[in-house]
Image 1 (cartoon, rainbow, N blue to C red):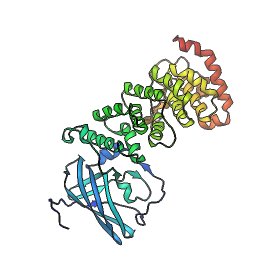
Image 2 (image 1 turned 180 degrees about the horizontal axis):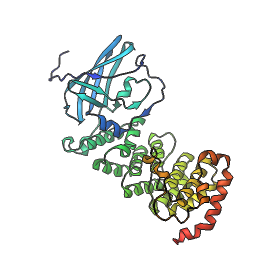
Image 3 (image 1 turned 90 degrees about the vertical axis):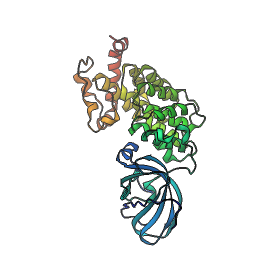
Length: 379
C-alpha cells in the first residue's frame, strides 16, 4: 500500500479467546470502568479503521490516528493493526471511527477491551464515535489535560449521537475518572439542555461528583425536571442507575429525594431514591424512611428499615466504594444514644427480613413513635 504521509507502523494485538468470526451475538457483558481503562492505557487515540478480514488466523487493518487523547502517538500517523483469531471468515469491516485504549510501546501495541466478556469480539476493543464531531469548542486540545480531552471527546460524541454505549460512558464519567474541570462545565450546561439525554447525563454526572454542592445541585435539578420521560431513553436509564449511588446528604437534597422524586417517579427511580435515603440516613431523612415502611414495593420497605436501623446503630454513610471492605457496617466512634441491644437485633438483613418482615416493620414503627420527637427536635 502506498501512503502519502510518513508511516508509523505499530502492531496492535488483540486476544479474542475462542472467537468464531465477527458475528455479533447476544453475550453477557459489562463495561470496564472508564477510570480503569484510562489508568491502564499508555495511549488513548481517536482513530479510523477500515479493511477486510481474510480467511485464516490473521487479518490486517489500518488505523488512521485522527486525534491523540493520551500518550505519545501523534495525529496523522497511520497505524498498522494486526489481529489473530481462530476460525475467522472473510468479512468486510467497513470504516469505523472510534476511541481506542492502547497499552505497550511503539514496537508493539495492544488494545484493551472496553467490556468484560468471556469471548471478546472486535467491537469489544473500541468505543465507536460519530464520524464528525466538534471537540475544538471545549478548548485547544494541546492545552487540555488528557482526562479533559477524554471528557471533550465523549461530550462531542453524545451531542450528535444517541448511542446508548456513549451515553452510559459519559453519564458515569465522574464515577471513576480523575476530576475534570472541563467536564464540570459541560455537565452544568447539559442540565438546562432541551435534549432529555443530555439533561440526564448532566444530572447523572453531578450526582456522582465528589463535590457535595454538585451532588446537591444534581438532586435538585432532577426534582425540578418535570419533563423527564423514564422509558425508552438511554440517558434516563443511566440516570436512574446513578441516582442509586448518590450520597447527597444536605437537607435540601434529602427533602428533594423524599418529597419529590419518591412521590412522582416510576418504581425503578423511586427504588433508587429510597436506596439513596437509606444510604445517607441523616436525621432529615428519617421521616421519609418511616413513611416508606408501608410502601407497596418490598425493596423500598426493606431500604426504609435499613435506613432507620443504620441511623439508630450509628453507622456511617454507605459509600458504594466501601462495599468490598464492609466498613459501612462498622459503627462510627463516639456516642450512639439510640443504639441498643434491640436496635442491633432488628438490623434487617435480607433473609431474616423476608421471613419476618412484620416483626421488623413493627419494631421500627414503634421505635420511631418513641424516639422520633426527641430526634427531630435535636435533643
